[in-house]
View 1: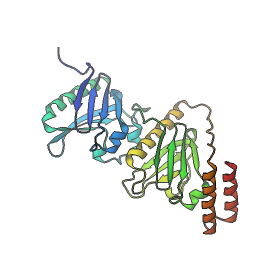
View 2: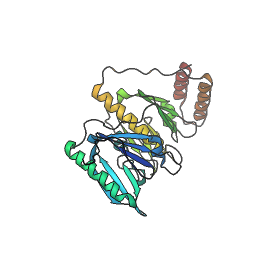
View 3: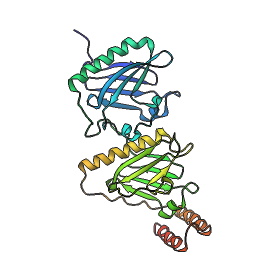
View 4: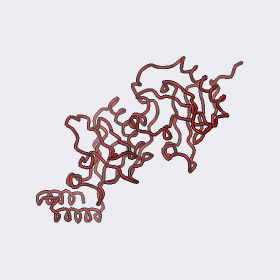
Length: 294
């Protein structure tokens, strides 16, 4: 009887990851080693259903390696959708790099996968996410603030030094998933990277990210890919799920603030006022808002 992948548990180990082939999916487990890309370590493991795979390739790699790769269907993975083609090749979670001497074994698994896909391959983009997004809660530190997501709302809390006066005037932000239409992620590995929340009823052109209270900006050491991209993917998945089965929006209560934190924010607001970055009216209004949070 010929061997097929209908028998569960076949494992192909490569650099930084091992793929376990099952009858209906591929389970990718990423290593925790120091040489493993941080994005892979952050993902831990991912189950990729066969219906989420559009194709399989096996190509020569660098320095005596071969690369087995599955091509995800468009719209099947929120991580890939959020990345929008900005991931470096070495950070592609769908590549398995192997020593060249394992090429024959890799070719066998590639053929087995193609055979299974031939039976169940679905054409065109997926109408829902088939690969799970990272679980909330998630957070990361941007240059101008801290972003957090609890599964129901995204919150931005501005930093003392990085946030623009426009963001300080707007105050800390909380965006319920029900009010969002999407997320825009520009990699921190390029100039002027940022994460922007797109409102459900987006119409007008958004301001620059450093002036937009619905955005946080990255910078050297801030908003790294392994933190900000899984964050963006989780928000995208929540937005998509909400859009598919949403009912009545659930208001997210604002947490009560530490009095010491409020006092520090009023002090900083006063500094902006003295520097002429905030008008008398804006200073009085924002101070009243902060005091009301006590």
